[in-house]
Structure formats: structure tokens, C-alpha cells
Image (cartoon, rainbow, N blue to C red):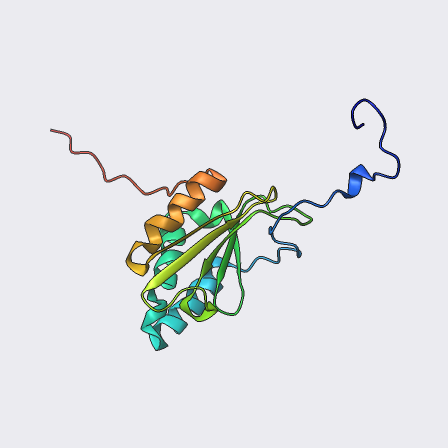
Length: 154
């Protein structure tokens, strides 16, 4: 309906949004495989160390139960579980320096929403892990869960 009149020829089931969300099926990769891959890369190329720190933090915080991921050539693509069966899929992409978006010593993280309200931020790579979890928290509602140390009884 448009101004009270039906819109002739308008296919409401095929409306195209200005979305840069993930447009392919999300073929997730096991976190253990991703950790091994980024550790191997970081061992050979120190400018990728922050990528290994990010994936380590996911495993250390039990995030592999709540987050699914895959990799492009050198980037990390993450979405919340359960993973939607069909695209578009909301994702957060952590770009490596080799992607051409940021140089060595920097990190570029972008959120690609299904609504087109995307966010992206550049920071020094030393801030990569907290920045990653900020995106996971704000975009997917996933917080890092850490074991609490036993309280002292006295």
C-alpha cells in the first residue's frame, strides 16, 4: 500500500535492502582449526599476532559455544549461534593487515548488518581483543565468560 492505494507490480517479498551482510551460506570452521591457522600465520608474520590473540580469547572464554566463524584468506568472519540457514547473515569481520584495509600495527573491525546500519572502526592492534568483544557484546549480545577465581573463605 502506498498512500492508501495498492502498489501495482511491487513484489514485497523481493525488496532489496542496502545491506552488506554475508550473502553466501555460512560454512563455519571449527574454532580449533581457526586457532591453529592464525597461530601458524602469526608465528611467521608477527603483524598478525593480534588475530591469534582474538581467536585465543574466544576459546578461553567459552565463546565457541555462542559464536560461529570462518575465515577468508586472512580475515576472521564471526556470527552468533544459531547460524541462520540462509543469507543475508549478520557478521562481524576482523580484517588482517594483509586485507589492505589497515596496515601493520592496526586492526579494522566491521559489523555488517542485514539492515544496512553497518559499523566499522580502526584501532591499534594492541586494542584488538577488547574491541572484538565490544562488537560481540553490542552486536550479538555475547559477552566473554571467564572462570571466577575461588573466593577466599576466612
